[in-house]
Length: 196
Image (cartoon, rainbow, N blue to C red; front, side):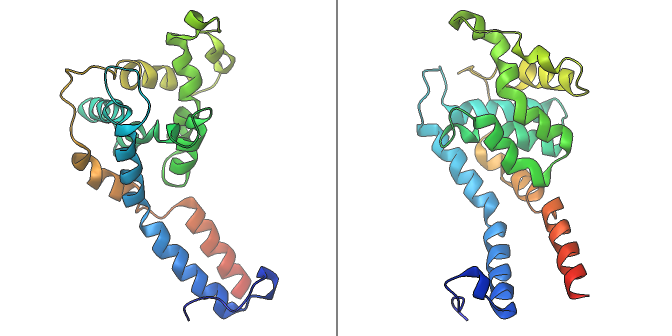
């Protein structure tokens, strides 16, 4: 089978959906390569900073790695701004959504909110509220998000920093995104329940 037999999903057969499931699994397996390609594209995107967005991401991941952070946090630091190309007004949420099936809820939350927390460093210069992050003051991961921005974001624009190259992080990305995700576990359970 090269393509499914239907033009409306309601008309699909079990064979069609098994075929599509195999295709989706192959596509998901290619996610690390697509993410690395997306990171490379950040090297040519809008900047205005002393370093490219790619170099900013490399500095973030390098600092996290050298500080002894977990592999998932290193990858989260690497990918925290990957949404800049396609979702410049909601890049944090996009990056977090990409990571969510593969990382802890804590890491997901930090990346989802890092854009708001990062505003602490500049919002007041543009007439905004630098303390907007304080609406999460009672959240258990508030301090973790503050620390992420302090140590792995706001300070990662240094043209003289000796960051690791993207190739250094490829195995990290492969390992984090090769974990069976919560989505895969839920789907397997749901399919098992339906067929059993």
